[in-house]
Amino acid sequence: MTESITLNQMNAQPEMLPELMLKPTEKTDRISAMDTIRGISLLGILLMNITGLGLYHAYDDPTVTGGATGWDLKVWWINSMFFEGTMRGMFSMLFGAGIVLFNSRLAGNINGVSVTDAFFRRLLWMFLFGIIHTYILLWNGEVLYPYAIVGMFVFSFRHWKPSRLIVASAVLLVFMSLIYNYDYYDTKTAFDKYTSVELKKKEFKKLTKEDSTAIETWKGKVSDAKPPKEKIDKFVKSMHKDYWSIIKVKAPIAQFMQSTYMYRYFFMEMAAMMLLGMAFLKTGIFRAAKSNKFYLIMAIIGYGTGLTVNYFETSYVMDHHFDILSMAAVFRTYDVGRVPTTIGHIAVIMLFIKSGILPFLQKSLSAVGQMALTNYVSHSIICNFIFMGYGLSLYGMLHRHQLYYIVFSIWIFQLIFSPIWLRYFRFGPLEWTWRSLTYWEKQPMKRENIRISEE
Image (cartoon, rainbow, N blue to C red; front, side):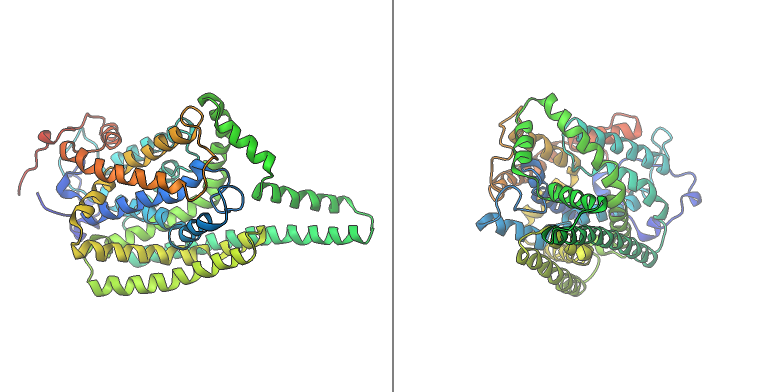
């Protein structure tokens, strides 16, 4: 069996290969570099998700809950500078690259399942996993559901050349920038109208119906962005109740995230990064096929652009004490900072992989990446037990920086557990379930069941 997939195979048209069918990935088919990046991004995602899992309304704004001074402010700054959107960005790019890889594997027949059939069946199961993850495992910020939907659309562009994929990605990111700019000007308009009405009140002028509407509109935005203590306390208390009570509170939030938020923000953002990931695979970037010089220049340009933008964004928000307008304003350049920083991360990871240093860590990170679905869902299960009322009831009880003690503990556990598990089994438990459902045939799980033929 060959060690990897050639670019010619990757670009082969399915209609040119009618006799070739699909089978699950064997270990030798995997691209180790991508597994390592996936492992790092999977662990990094928890850096950002932990605030949503353990605090109320604190993801972007540390002044709401969790603390905004000392180490609480420092960890917010570190995350905003280096990790906000970048881990999700890498994960989305890898998902896009995975679409190309999945549809380029040429192998024997398994139950007559063709590449396209298997791919869409795979995404339909992911779609269902996303619903379960949100409504049963209670994680409103999960990405399986949107990945499944976006993946079905992005699939159509898998044969495009890298240059076209990059241009398409850039166009989608421009559209995202327009949405963020619209949101900013909508907020600014509401604020301007409110201040105008307040000035009229000070001058004892009679207020019109439109003036009253302007006041209510702005107060509504303030309440949403900066919830009053009573609202925060009520929500925190609701998370300390039993499982079924928590479901009732979280279900409307999940519905919003998987509908309005999904199509307004996630769809174009994820599609853009998936297309970019396809291009990175086809050009060899994700295969660690470029020179060290290439990755070094890539890191310098990525970090030079992205971190500069991120620094000005974080400084601007802090200088304006996290007021609503400043928070909305910095989102206008969100992708200008996020995407180059993501590219910088990828370059540094590739240099790390090519260097061969810390091989035990690289092996562990690769194992975490191979078990990405299991490890991702386990984040929710572990953290919900820690934070929710049916567990330790620590929701809203910890400072922001204290959440990262939990993060680091989970990291250590998964870095140790994943390679041990894969020493004895082909897949993680959820990966095995997913593959068995995709091919509608129970897959061999234990290592002794693996048979790899040689060419």
